[in-house]
Length: 273
Image (cartoon, rainbow, N blue to C red; front, side, top):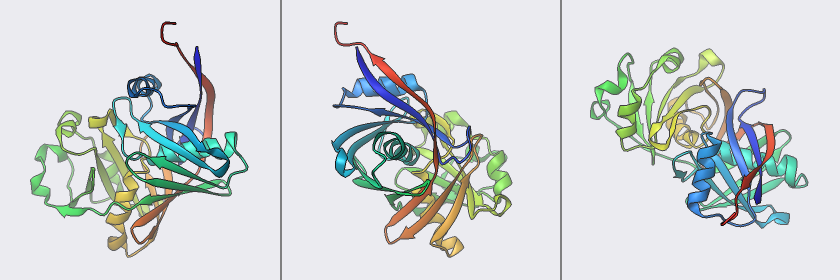
């Protein structure tokens, strides 16, 4: 019987039962992709992070992310969760970790007190016409503008109330050529620069509570509108969370806190067992 040490972490959370839960599984060697996917499906969280040591004493690890149905190219909250596990539970002497990823290069995470700062590539997209999108996508909503990032569609709504009230047609959304839909608006009502929600039925995540990777696009979208390079954001899902954003060139630093919810083991049957 193979045992995998596993954590469940609430990312972008400073209070219990808020933020985005992610599973973090510590590996000694890579398992077959089908087995990684099966574990993520069994965890039934929006993301499971798999962490493999490369040079742990130097803070270097390999990292992959899986939703219940697919491997993804980048995941912010599961990266934050993986860093939290290493900083708080496994290697507390570390102040920085570097994750080697398959699709997003090297990702650095630094500990600053009880806050973690992730250095991610900025996703600079381009504006597209609202008229190019299905009208049925916005029944009951009034989109102001649309923006296409590398994987996600951003739609700006009139205010935070419209973002909170929006109900997407999931079946239609799953057919569009995007990882997910991000709805967003200015966030004065929440004491932040902007608010958002993220819907990703195409990757098995109907609504993601707090989506770090989406903010690599949102940072590029809102910076010229607000005239800011440092912003505070809040994702207003049923498990809300707050992020700090700081743009430097083609990179964005995403900052947030995390809390440990659960520590356990996954027992995997050995072949033939």
